[in-house]
Length: 173
Length: 173
DNA sequence: TTGCCAACTGGGGTGACCCTCCACTTATGC
DNA sequence: GCATAAGTGGAGGGTCACCCCAGTTGGCAA
Image 1 (cartoon, rainbow over the protein chains, first blue to last red):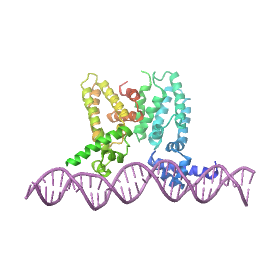
Image 2: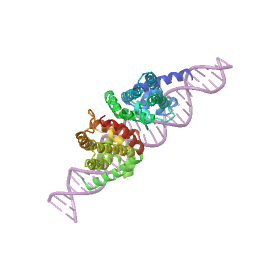
Image 3: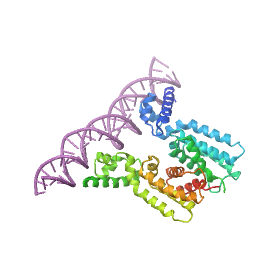
Image 4: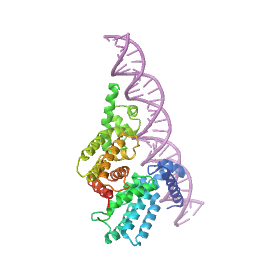
């Protein structure tokens, strides 16, 4: 990648971060390009789809969430770790504008999706081995549920409360 | 209302129903006007906001859901009635394109929102009297949760399964 | 039946958006 | 330095929501 291309890529990403934080996942791509000081064609070459831009913007945050999952995996109560991580995910999704929408409209080959599913899977396996998860519940169900809660709330407190309520059914009777 | 205005109103509503069923809540208002055979200004006069058009389109369906709530209120197990109705709501929201989005972005004075909250409240009160609802759970939480599940699923089976899972926490320990 | 007028209409304008093409510029390897 | 491939952005086409306003028409009163 040429140095000027790299510079523009970074400028676009920074502008996108600011604009998406302000206006959410359907922020204007033209405004992002304008703020970055590049033409809209340049934005579209670096990020052919809106989704690809969203992925790039949220990549760091998703990585941090995965790191948190690895940290929680070392805790004693694996059932609690799974629920805690999912609640954390709900809160981040609700308060980080655009993140939840981005995760909802994601496709199976998206890197964010893959990273989160793997992190979730690891915690899930541990929790299942500890007998802390009901039969018939899989990790996709839980991620969908948590994404759903994120979508429907804007407030961290609401997200945490609703996620905890929704995840009550995870534990066996 | 003049006869021609009434006729146009009905034409727009019919076109909107078809188009929203095909393209969801963010269907093109211009296409709806075109299909209805009226100018876009006429559509905007009858329905000043997208939300007002969505409300009109989904009014009948919401009314049917409220009727279902009244029917369920006469059943023996009030706790089960509440959960059944909420699952039903989740399935309708997931399978009726645009309904869930419409309910999410609703304001407090929307007629659909008011109708559903009242219906939910009635079932909730009965369930609470029967001791079938955990402390600290209110009807808004449940409606938000169910709307969230609707948003995140497209398939009736998925919606029902996730709603049932999410509502597991409603019952007292 | 006729004529009036308020209610109603829709074409067209404005500004915003997404996305693509293509003539131009520039960084980089030789 | 220079050739050239990589990179650029302005302009333009198509779509959209929304609004203005000159023209039309339904319904009522005389």
